[in-house]
Length: 108
Image (cartoon, rainbow, N blue to C red; front, side, top):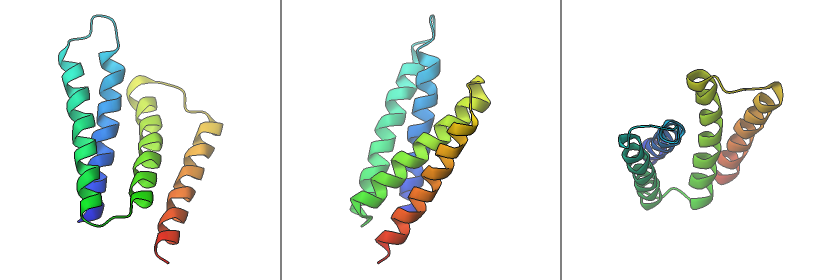
């Protein structure tokens, strides 16, 4: 259950960040800002619930932040045509390795 809560936090945060990109455009409808606020509020609520369910803070925050960065970079490429260079892809791979190491380290 804690992993589902953490996944909810990640999806909410990435969604809010992508909406922030749209909300910041000139002439954007103010409803986008509401989605941004609701997404970030949901992300922190899910993260808090994951912590309440027993997930260690270092693991939860590390995975939440790392996955958020990686997913936002990929989604920005797909949705907005933003650059995703080889160096950035390498960084995403290093993030994935870091998340794996955090999880393996927490298991001991």
